[in-house]
Amino acid sequence: MLRAYPTLRAEDASLKNAVWVDLVEPTEAERTAFEQAFGLRVPTKEQLAEIETTSRLRIDQGALYMTAPLIFAGENEPWIPVPTGFVLAKHVLLTVRFANSAAFNTVAAEVGASAELAPAHAFARLLEVLVDRMADLLEGSARDLDDASHVIFRPDAPQQTLARETAQLRRLMIRTGRTSERMARIHYTLVCLDRMAKFTGDRCCDWLAPDIASRLHTVSSDITSLIHFAEGLVSRVQLLQDAATGIISIDQNNVMKVLTVASVVGIPPILVVGVYGMNFKHMPELDWTWGYPYALALLAVSVLVPLIWFKLKDWI
Image (cartoon, rainbow, N blue to C red; front, top):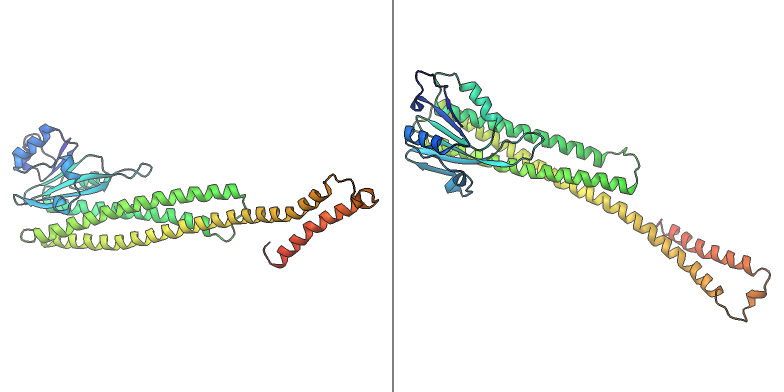
């Protein structure tokens, strides 16, 4: 799909009059139409997916070719970065993407009817809206971590069975793990956007308007603060996962302690029963009237002595 801004009128529908051309999953005919109108090459999806810095940021025929993995998915969908291309020249801005984007739609609605639209202005506005979108996603991730922290560290947590608490903490660990993965993608996207803003400011300083250069500098400053915020959230993720793992280990250790005490306490009675369970003919207690109560008392003492010992040692 090819979209041109400002929106071309029917009587003046030449693509050469466009200031911003937005290609969404472009066809070969749309690529050819742009290249013939402006003499600039349209990067392919494979070229946009390259990760080398020299491939993401370069100059060709006086135009800046820049790429960045942008997160286009909604709140309830997987956050999968999609390679997106930007070609900025003095007379035109080209964007090439392969997914729908609310940020692009917002900017298109703002500049679509503007008669004085400039390519650099559209590019700067795209960066500003994209950075705002990343900030919103980071705020959502921070709220997710706050919820997980409240569950893990709340002092008035109701007593639960081990199985239920383990299942709850397991879900929290999965949730925080997915949040960490999302933040890593946001962090990489922010780094790429920061490189684009600085690259544009450095390479286009001879024809870039002062107000646009100032906006790009502001975008870079905002990205720096967001990167620091994301790094802090990553540290919180590690803390929450370590805490959840520690709580699970403590609960499991308590279970193992109970089982160990039970097994140790059960050994002396087994010895007593084993001794008096032997079928020897001459055993003094066989003909003793108090032999059975004596054996029961001996069993009780053999159980109580280890329990008292464990209690004195503060093991139980």
